[in-house]
Figure 1 (cartoon, rainbow, N blue to C red):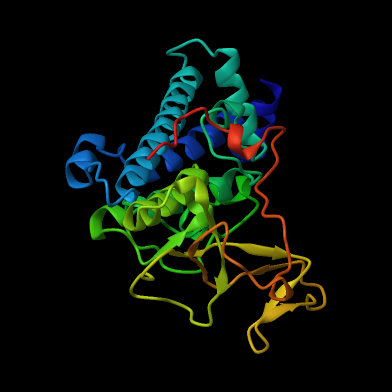
Figure 2 (cartoon, rainbow, N blue to C red):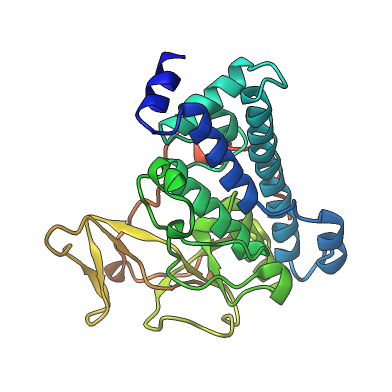
Length: 297
């Protein structure tokens, strides 16, 4: 009450007004849930194309998160207007939004992320854009109150995403844009295993950093991926090797990488390899334990 009165006297928006504005802004940007029935008709389960199953499963996971964000913000608006009781979970959403933090209620349904609220929403919309929806906007398109909750972070994709549902499987996959990346990698191996009649547990991945910025057609075997970053190093495109970071540059993007599927018995030149750990945000749990959902293809 005192904070609201003080804000009113100084001509500033009260916390309730800020919450209502941010909630309305986010709700206006959220698309409808994916139509899973239509997706199953367009991309049915096929023996020779496991990526159909990957797409439909990803849509289902993002639908759960979409519903959680939408329902919580609708209920928050009702609670502020006195139409419903402000429960503990709704109060946590309000507190998180005010300080620019992703609510815990959302994170229970979410992929791992350490981003502040504004950049999290932009990242979320970009992931939906990769699958189908035409919803992505730079943060500068959001009102000032929403930009402040995201610390004025503007999210940009390294490559314009191809809408998978609308235009078919992309030639390059945004590997860090998946909800459950392990299912995608399993699908890539499953396609190879079924094509050449090889048990999938006999397969692994090789990799090759490519020298082009984009590819219009997929490789004959394997997949092109993008969306990886290097911490404390950079890729030297002239020498085609890992190199020291430039001064004051902590993170650098990795060029497009092809992941050819190979048999585990295949010989790889060890003198060409430098083993690096591939990490996702560690939120007190293993990446493989983020969801108990099946990734069988």
